Image 1: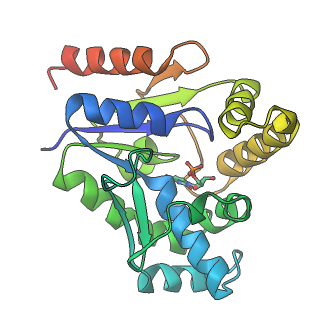
Image 2: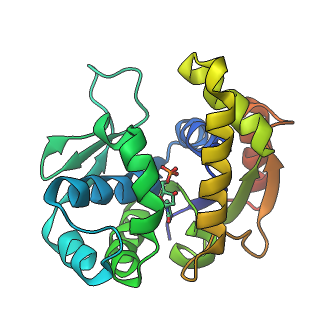
Length: 224
Ligand code: DC
């Protein structure tokens, strides 16, 4: 049985940063499932598939190849590389256009059904830290440990503005974060929820190392 840590939480809570640091610390593979939905969204935008057309998006998911892999040495700044039909789309999936469409794409049953086996297979192959919105609730309900990362919307927007070097766009980032929170928590299928038994960590209170330390301590206490 592989070890798997499921990390869920809203946009900008720091799931990727904490998840990646944790994976490095415990020697696990890091999988950011948000990148998979982003790559599918990019494919839909490029091929003119309507983000509201679930069946067409399900077909698209079945025909395009999405791979999330460890970045090569030429990309020391990246946590992961994502490929769409072999093409490196890591930068292209982070554009505002994809940001705006990804919640619509990811809410369809056909899309989630296509992603589920790929995500589960990754966790059964290696020890894994998997981050997303529904990992502890739907994808890996038997995960070794479930973590729910939170931070106040104002903290998340402030961090985003600092990361982008654009403090004047704080209000815009805040609005986008609140819009995604509502979309991700309010959708019918696999909404963002704290999984039963999850430990809750606030990244506005604990820094990355602090979060990793709590998680590692908990894993050790479980004998995992
Ligand atoms: O984590 P992120 O912001 O890159 O995720 C992009 C979108 O993908 C997010 O708005 C909701 C969706 N998503 C999802 O529905 N389920 C997941 N497990 C991960 C992401």
